[in-house]
Amino acid sequence: MAGPTVIALDAMGGDRAPEMVVAGANVARERYPDVRFLLFGDEARLAKLLGKFPKLAAVSQIRPSESVVGPNDRPSVALRQSRNSSMRLAIDAVRSGDAGGVVSAGNTGALMAMAKMVLKTLPGIKRPALASMMPTGRGEIVLLDLGANVECDAENLIQFALMGALFARDVVGVPRPTVGLLNVGHEEVKGHDDLRIAYENLRAAQDLPMHFHGFIEGNDIGAGTVDVVVTDGFTGNIALKTIEGTARLYSEFLRATFRRSVISKLGYLLARPALNALKNRVDPRRYNGGMFLGLRGVAVKSHGGTDAFGFANAIGFAVDMIAHGFNAKVKAEIERWQTLPLDTPKTAAL
Image (cartoon, rainbow, N blue to C red):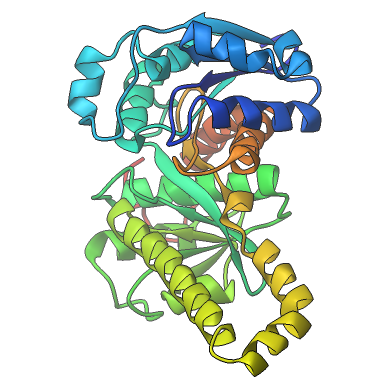
């Protein structure tokens, strides 16, 4: 797209939409002054909200929609009955070229289904993958797939590895990412057939945009053993939810401990600066935004319960993917994979 970067926003998606979406767009406007916004949703409500943010209104355009995809709507139903919804029209804007990317905090399944149907996958990509970031002991890492594909074959896993490496390199800024396949052990003989096939192909390939570490286990995720963790959507989603749940559990433990006695409360006052630093380090809003990698357009899923700060970070991911020409690099890398020399024959045809 020529000219300024334009982001289409599903302004009605999310627990606190459209207020949160508009406030988040205003935060993003301050960070990215050259970005323009298309807001899809209730025209009267959006116009009133934009009145509170004159500078945002100057770089935004409201496009009315007739309906909203509900949080409990089945993806199949949303595909058939929500063609004039704020979510669908925002995705359509990317397909038509009016916007370079779409961000929504709405129904994940519906967004995935609509984005895949409307935008289609890039040439050579069999399935898109949902990727996100999380903090570890060594820094931020990329995880994919986090639920877009419950079942994956070796071809999918190899493509996820390539896309994840490119995202870590070009968007996150890791010069040569280390990539690992999540498995039940580090040994080559462990795991199901598709995992072992993907392992053999990635190990045999030369001149990849990454260092292939091999198999990793669940405890390697938090340790930051690799920069990119690759798995199927079933395992990835469970791993992500387990990590999130454990973090909330320990947070509750910590609060309960400091409330136990007067001495504990005094200890909290002394430890508060360090605790605030820890809170900022693991703040999920900093990593808000699930990227659908492998589509013919940029699509980012924000957490539905986030606030303006978190939504602005999701917008930031979309802006960065557009600025780095991420999709063009994925297309070129998949094409190049076909010609890479292998030490052993490919058993996963791409």
